[in-house]
Image (cartoon, rainbow, N blue to C red; front, side):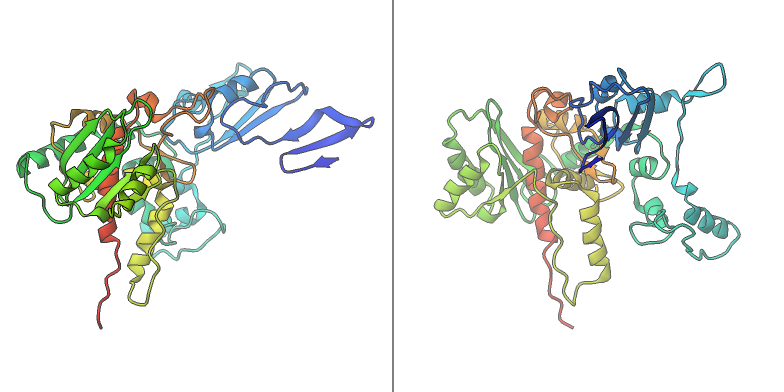
Length: 406
């Protein structure tokens, strides 16, 4: 026998058996999924909402059984089409396709608690089956998720249903309309209120360099320039920061696309600006001290659970600032039409662990069929990236620990 991290094979007549084996693949595409010739073959896919149609197509040539397991996260692949089509029954009574939907209420732990509540009793929170969704367990329990998760996450993570409403968009049209009405009510242009931050998304290739200034109420100014001569970025940054009284430490550059180099030049000039890596990890929680409340620690833990990476975190913060059911306090003037267009097309997606994520900005592999933000928008999300940088900068203020004397 041969055992390693991705396959189990038998030897037959001194050679590896070509027809009896188990192979594991971690891939969104069909690479390595062709050329199998066993008489009885099973293709099994996990986290299948993220599996490309090419994998299914490759398996069609050799599989006679298919098992797919996954959450109904937003996708448009064979998994969604099969689930939406439902069961497919053959004439002899067996199933060509059988869809098994498992809801949160199917957990014996949750079902027991709900039955106790129905009888007017206080849930005992017994774990009939350890490791299966409990009724009460902080942010990982059914009660918290049903109360606090948004309707999209509830549909996907609790009800086992694909969400088909307007909330399949990260920023629904109604939210953006409300942001424009807030800007109209405040007046445009207007004087800044409170702390002022600037997000700078530096040009890469034929993209634009975008400078966006925001205060605690919303967007104040935005300039998009084709900067083929990238040496002008430093001067424009300083000029705009001085115009709006933005402190150097409140200027945030995307570290990609030459942003780090621009930031380094500015630091040499005495401007201690900051850089943010969109592909980095989620902002680590503040180290808790004795004066931190339990509520603060739970909130910090939940933030790390919600977002897949830094890009998702930043766009998630903007989502909270626009969501009428959350903070819903950000103003965006209607004159920034390209910014509005980009935000209106952003998809709302969650991975298999229920974490918010965004499609990659560009293809990692030229042969990849994975949908990217550039596919969706038609070009790089320069204006949107500059906005989330500025809003992320505003968020850093609220994350500072305040010492409270006893």
